[in-house]
Amino acid sequence: MYDPEIERPVAMILNNCPEGDVTGADIAACTVWRGIIYAGDERKGGIGLLPSEGEKAPPAIVLPGFGPAWTALSAGKSSEKNPWDVFSLQGCDQ
Image 1: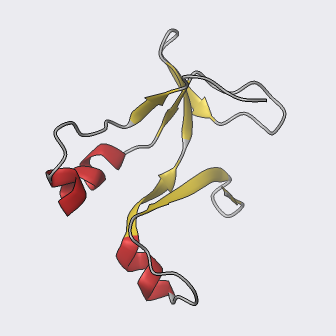
Image 2: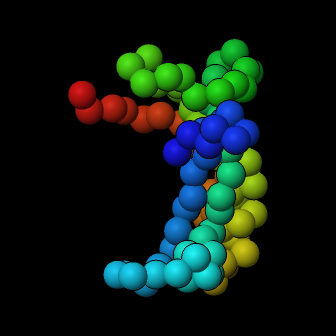
């Protein structure tokens, strides 16, 4: 989602949310991470805003603080391998 107030793309990652009519408190309780998404280029070492619709996808996205947020969950604590904050693009269907 694009947040016009901060002029940045933001996202939420949810885990085990209830279905149907939910309240803001319900969503808050199942929110793992919420923050600004950045485009990353590991080859060039650059970080910036996501490209606009129709532009080429970045080679990576950065979700600042996602790794520690996931690790703090019970699901993350039981994982053998936990995610980091940088995710590389593996492929794209068009």
